[in-house]
Image 1 (cartoon, rainbow, N blue to C red):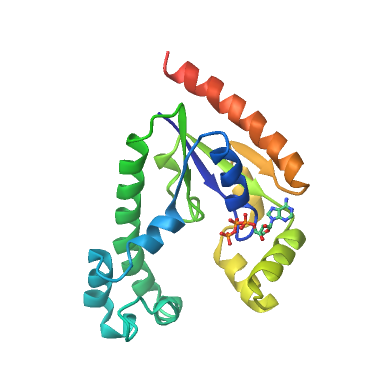
Image 2 (image 1 turned 120 degrees about the vertical axis):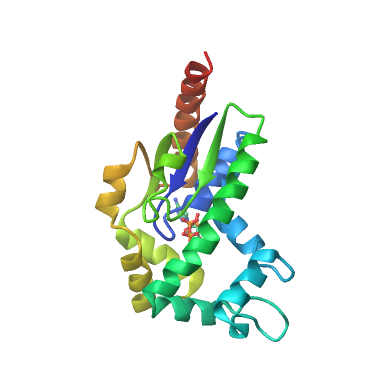
Length: 201
Ligand code: ATP
C-alpha cells in the first residue's frame, strides 16, 4: 500500500491536517497516540521502562512519571538512546500492524520525528507540514502556554525547517485559513489516489 509519512515541527499543524485527511476517509496512524497508549498502567512497555530506569519512572498511582523520564534522558544521551531503543521498535511494530489492516487506497503514518529518527525508509513519501517559524511559535504559545525558551529548546531538538523541507517529497504550507488548508489537502488526496492507483496496477 502507498504509505505517506506525515511530519513537521511542533505546532506546525500535523493534527489539523490529519483531521482533514480523516474527513476524506483516510485514517491517520499516529505515533504520538501509540507512544502514549503503550505506557499506560499495566502495559508491558511501562514495566520494561520501570525495569530499565528504576521505580522512579512511576508515579505513586502507577502512571508514567513523564517529567522525571524527560529530565533523565535530556541530561544523558546514552539513556535517551536506550529509551528510543525500547520505544521506537514497539511503536513502529504497532504502526505496521495497523497499516496492513487498512482497507483504503493509501495510508498515512503521522511521525513527528520521522526525519530526526531516520525512519524515511518506512514510508513511500514524506509529507512535511510546514509553517513559518514566527507563526509556529505563536500557535504553540497560544495552545500550550509554554515559555519562549522552552519552545526554542524544543525547536532546537527537532531538525531545522530548511532540512525538513529538503527531505520532503510533498510540502503542505499551513499558513492560511482552515478552508485554504482543506483545499490543499484535497489536492494532495487526489494526487495520492492517482499514485496508489498506479502502484496497484
Ligand atoms: P504538535 O507538534 O504539538 O503535536 P501539531 O503539529 O499537531 O502540534 P496542531 O495541533 O495541528 O499542530 O496545531 C497547533 C495549533 O495551531 C493548534 O492550536 C491549532 O488549532 C492551530 N492551527 C493549526 N493550523 C492553523 C491555521 N492554519 N491557522 C490558525 N491556527 C492553526
